Image 1 (cartoon, rainbow, N blue to C red):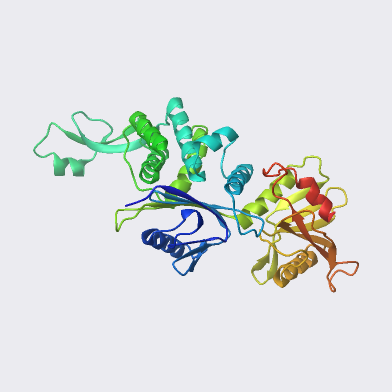
Image 2: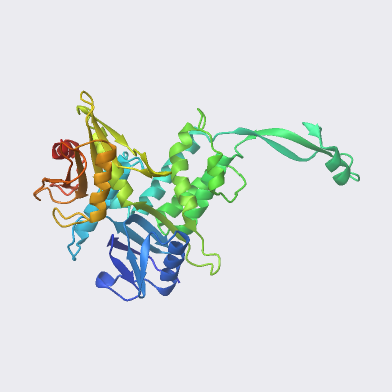
Length: 414
């Protein structure tokens, strides 16, 4: 029998079948589901330990039956974690996802977040339901489709093979193929499939009540199994543009759903994000957001390194006047002051050579009170080849995500 509870952990923490502080634990069936899910995803999300798992750098939320596990980012090594820290980092993660356009929460107030949503997953569910309600009020899109069947009148073209096979006795009927203009199309089928999954995985009474009400207003359309291939067939145009937010969340829900087919028990849904990639994108967007900057910032740069292998710095800054370039490589991990790994330094050395720059920075989350200075590579650019280990506070003094760090990052490298 599934239980109803919320467990919050920070990245790199562990959960086991043994009861831990705060009464946190996994049942044997929940642990088996997590192992199975991780195995199907190249074991990237967590590491198996004795009677449990240790989370990696992926953050987000996992729901197994009535259990919700929220994995949150963290930028210090403190062993103890307070409820206030969990709440601050949940808000920071939501803000970062919103700022990077992975979730649209502009219309949700902070007070509403604290009052109405137990987890990030509940927020995603509510945003999806709000989008579907909007589409129902606006009117679901209709499209032409081919339909075939027995009719009492000739409509469209007669399918003579089917007519002979099915209507030798009932000659008053005509088997035809004709066009129908209705709501039976892929866009609405995706919405319906996502609603069905939400009803199966959500234990929130408010969410389930809203799903029931929406389905009463939903037209009678065929429910189909949706795969990745169906989403590649979608086309954006004037009529389907209002669907984009709903389809984005529906895609995450459908493709990350793992039904418990064997036991018919605890279905699973996971929405997880790689903090390394999210941190990189966040830094890019805060730099790009600085409209007064004299620097252009480019994202996901690359050059050929050896044969068909490429080299890819995270961010390249380019002075608009002098065209001088600087490299920023973001690292979401905690390190000791001015003690990067050899691999990270070798990576930066190669970036400096390939982009012909004398300055680069390894940017980590951390306290800005740490002393920073450029270190010298002993080979490479004749007139100086340097790299700095830099730290930037993720949170401001109020304990909220700091979106105003762009200028401070520039000052560290320029």
